[in-house]
Image (cartoon, rainbow, N blue to C red; front, side, top):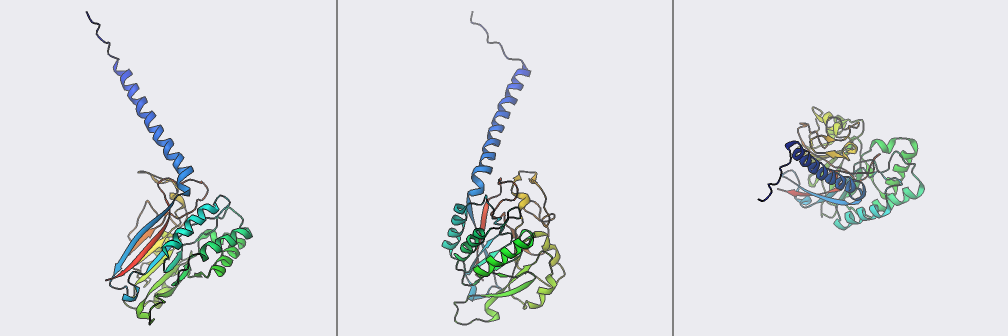
Length: 297
């Protein structure tokens, strides 16, 4: 008679199944960890978006800008990464370049060669409509960083617009007027939206940027009514776990961040930025810049 195969006890079958599942999960986690440390921080992502509005004048139909934030240049920030980033932005040839703050890491003293390299990178983007920036907390961490950032912006012709606004126009148009442009507003680290509001004309399209997303909460009842806003300061979501969200909470992004949204009364987009703070790793947080095109309805 053929022998009957003995069935494993239930506890052994359950244990083997649990072991197999654990092994698979550990393998997946190791792949995620490897990519997060060795691949993701050096892979540049171009994020494209469009904004369509009746308030955008015809002269700015298909006008484009790049929003770039949190470069966090340090000794770990390779020239290869910077070259790749800025060559891709230059290739797309945006009309305007917007910088959301923190071009240098607070943890690294800014050397002369680092200044020159950053100024060279930013200058490589022509941006005929202008280059504008708001200040990040690491830009003013000490006097040396403040001097370095101001020097870079002076050499690269970048205008800082903390708590003020500028008229952005198509400088190649035959005629330029306040009716043919949009208003670009910037919130400083200590926001004062009420000081910006008087510069905005009725029915004028307003683009707002701030380093801290939480500063959007200050806009309510200020008289400033942006149509679209951008922010960064996503250090806490360099590692963004499924369900759990950001691996830590940072100042300026405690209420509004890539895992938690708030009703501000206007559309806003938070970029995951370019550099790394502390941990040289990125999980579910692409190295990115945002390329946006405006369309007039």
